[in-house]
Image 1 (spheres, rainbow, N blue to C red):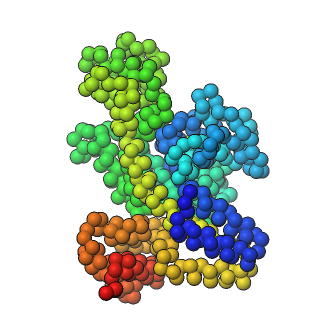
Image 2: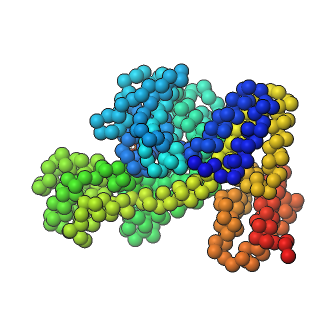
Image 3: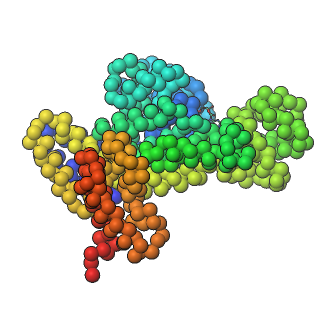
Length: 507
Ligand SMILES: Nc1nc2c(ncn2[C@@H]2O[C@H](COP(=O)(O)OP(=O)(O)O)[C@@H](O)[C@H]2O)c(=O)[nH]1
Ligand SMILES: [Mg+2]
């Protein structure tokens, strides 16, 4: 894992300071260094049963996280890259115990140990995605009843112990420890969805973790009734896209984007859950007359009970692996091309799942920004460690070192990320258009994207950078509250540095 220039600068700072601080702070620095060198930690968060574990399986290309029921769905599991597949139970006292996978190659749904003694699970798998990202599956923020939603929120807002239960505590720790969040929502973003997201952005921002970078998926797109979405023209994916765009508006600026997705199809297509037996059964169903097919697809009950040449157990299997919409998609693909191979049918289903767009977004938002995200999180931890040390001399030394680092032009990106966190977490209120601008400038390492002028000619970039630099300086001096002013100064300097980088000011 290549840490990148910003992470390297913070790592150097930690190493240089280590001999000058007490042993507790030094131990903290060692942990910061370890995290700087590790892949970006992405927590998959969202309400219970929104499809988090299903999505985790699709991402890592293996059906290894139990979904739906079982005690492991109530635990945090960290998925790391490892050359030998292995799962460990980590107990609250630090003990570890290797866990065998079950017969299907999954983490067993039941552990056979007292859950109260378990901290979390660690899984090591040879999955390409895990080389760049450590994926953290969480039990879920928010529960089915309002009371536990309120509990979760108070937990997240940093009032542990106040009616909090152990489950929410572990979720919170996982998210607080994460450097980025993939938030799973379904159909309507409820107010508690939004509140939970706001709460954990605030929690992570005010704690040691630094800025939270979040994108969201609108999962279970297959359960949307397109007729209920104005402008969809009765098309499911169009309806899902419209709903996702609407939710992106609602969740902005905490979430960079919301992408529609059918996690179940992605999981089935990506994890070997779709076999040639399944393909054969679907082929038989596709050969049925139009009316019979349409009738069977009306409901799960009809699909299972209608008179047809496919055994009930196979139908049951198809239903759990694809659900009705997925079966319908497969039948359409087979009707269009009856000679479709099982492999191509699987690819067709994968395409219909929306996973490709999610992976591309992950790449763009998380992997490309991993250096900045990790460096800012590390810097926030270093600051917090120094603050907690109780030794004023030590605190001053760390503070001074950070100031020196942040004064360098190449480290301004870190200040910008800090400012971004203040704005996205709501700690500094900004008018929406300005918040968006901060997000844009701080959200990319590419100059044209920072300026919102992708692919535009150089003179245009140069002129715009200068204009915005001037605007933000004026805002910092005249239009802003003191908190806004601090952010504005940082944004002003960011534009100024962009302008310089583009050759402005040189002859
Ligand atoms: N129809 C449909 N079901 C899904 C989808 N994604 C997940 N599920 C199902 O929703 C249930 C809960 O999923 P799970 O991943 O365990 O949710 P978690 O509690 O958020 O981890 C499981 O039965 C999944 O098969 C989807 O996109 N469409
Ligand atoms: Mg789960």
